[in-house]
Image 1 (tube, helix red, strand yellow):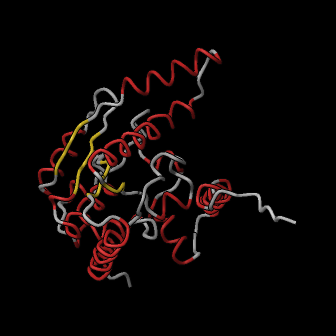
Image 2: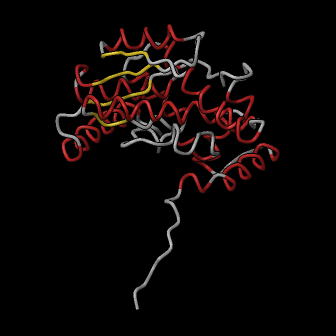
Length: 245
């Protein structure tokens, strides 16, 4: 049985210990999207380090229809919030790629913004002497629903061993309102939910991760295939082992 309160307290202590060893006096830099993961990470960091030591960075690309949720989270937690629009940076990269190849793939267009956003987080991080929080969870990592060197980067990762259902439970233990914990994630491109894009629900995925049981053979096949295809994102970069003679 998952103990959300204990897990929340354990993560808070882990963040405190990590900053003591790896960033004493530094601020936690969190990219705030308005979704459950960034909301829970920001709340955990505020409890662990004090709200004065957390910076929430909002990074819309042009107009973001739900950015008010991010602003409300920042106000709710009482943390510092800044907004940096990444529209010009993303457009500039896309235009340079198009100039060389004449076109740009959908996958390229999808992954440029998260990589630009991570660049921005590190720019803020090194300006204010901070450490960047990774906000990925186990469920999304398991099936590769992240961008390598984009949202799967960071200096410390509080949620990467927790499934979506467990992240939500920790969010409730933190006292976060439902608007932050239960907000349905949208891809921001075609208006589809994450579950629409994946082809199965997080509830099914989480159960499979924790128990190995998946009653739907089609969903199991999709999960297994995505996991196998995306393992490279989770493993350390392969390196050639040179052995001097």
